[in-house]
Length: 207
View 1 (cartoon, rainbow, N blue to C red):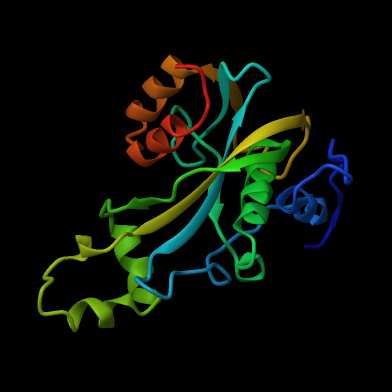
View 2: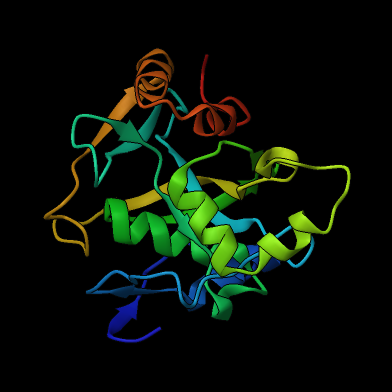
């Protein structure tokens, strides 16, 4: 990554596992990555590969949420597309996204279960067409709709917060707040994001 300075992690290299050591290579950038031309899609089903972070506070009673860039009154979990230079470690993409969208410097605690999103939207159909999935679906005699395979494949990681910065790449377009489990569930239902609720439920947040 360019235009950044190394993240200062609270990691002891003598006791850290390989995933944590890999994350020492992540940097803070002044600008968020934009566009989908460099994003990664599954070679198996054409799904867009997305990574994100469930950042919990010290006692696991609250999760860090951000406002949607398109719908300011809706609250979601930070996440975004995995890019081609992150194909060997999706956790790098997840840490980049929580920095760009939430201004959070964090470390990975554990990987959560993969979530396949079958929601059908106009933009997702266009994205899949652009990634040559249309040919795959039209060649299948057993499928006459787009929902036979996922639109997105989500890779979420439970994270521990190191610090929150006051200035971050998307600070002009997003707000952030800590929510209890009940509050987060309410916000995600209001935002119509069941896949994010599934990710939250798979974390260690106190329910």
